[in-house]
Amino acid sequence: MKRIRVMILALLISCACFGSVAGATAEPELLTQLLEEADRNNPELQAARERAEMVSFTIDQANSLDDPMLGIGLINIPIDKLNTSSTPMSGGTLTLSQKFPFPGKLIAKGEMAKQRTIWYAKAYEDARLKLRQQVKDAWYRLLYQRQAIDLTQQNIDILDDFIRLTETRYKVGKGLQQNVLKAQVERSKLYDKLLTLQQKEEATLAELNSLVDRDTDQPLEEQPIPEIGHSALALADLQSQAKQRRPLFGAYRSLIDQFEEQRKLAKLDYKPDFNVWAGYRWRNDQLPDGGSDFISTGVTINLPVKNRRRSAAVAEADSGLRMAHRRFQNFRSQVDLDIHRALTRMNEAMAQTDLYKTGIIPQADQTFKATLAAYQVDKVDFLDLLDSLLTLYRYEIDYYRALTDHERGLAMVVFAAGLENGTLTDVSRQSSEGQ
Image (cartoon, rainbow, N blue to C red; front, top):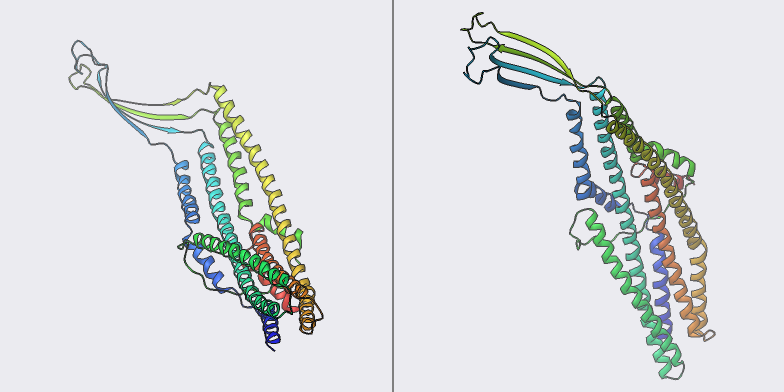
């Protein structure tokens, strides 16, 4: 009777492991809280936001004229007498000048600053999406690791019961010593795996806390792994949406525009700038002509004769423009690849969860039950029973991994396609409810 009680206890524990997942459909509210904290507190994200704000102040600087120049001096003072009443041309002078760039230069400078501001603003938005993807990825890895730890500990407890049982049977001459040794070895393997999982869980928790700017050792309450929905997500649609919604696409467009304005400015540099000035000269009243004051005005221009320097500036802008187009093309290809990989990962994980939930795990569970029943009447060897238990354990571990892999793939799709948080998840769950 004691043997039967131990086996039934093991069976009930094993069945409870899988049954708890089937009912875990609660939304991860804590994840929403962590995402909000990451938006508010992540230092790297806040630095990106401050950088975008800092660069925005360069627009007014680029659009502004240089300060006017005010000059004051003495003109035509004889060195032998050093006074302003000796010659008619002596006197004091006051000048005011203002430099005006050739028409179009200020506009080009302003547009360059504007496009640079757009780049950093879009980069901040993309960094925010990336941070959310990192938080979700760490979150679901943590859920898997904790579920795997619980399942491994439960199976260790079952093996402890098996070890006690096999030792008792061996002492009364009804069991084999190799059964005891085999159970002990499998128990040691599971314990080694438990230690590895616990180390990974601690590292993942520290990573998650760091992303939301918490103390790395701050605890996080246990959460169930949510069930996944069924939906058909079209690769072409996601890749098309990404080009409209992913912030870095807008950033690269602004980068191209920035280099186009730089090229325009470099070509305009072949045109002269203007310096408009006006002067007032006052003279000594004791001069023979009564010392009438003079006014004068004029325009000076620079002579753009250093063509080598200007040609190099145009060539630099052309190279930058080609580089921007190449980077944009590479980014577009990388996004398409990221979406494709993430969607493939999602679909594979969804198929695996269906297979494990509806086929493999129920079959493995039935195998364990049948082996247990056969072992109770001495029709199968203990090693067969142990193998059926460990096989069920491995399938359950794989099931949890597939569940979280799906959610991690979903997080990557949301990031790569630039979708707002929850959009794809809502579609998935609504599709599931409609089936």
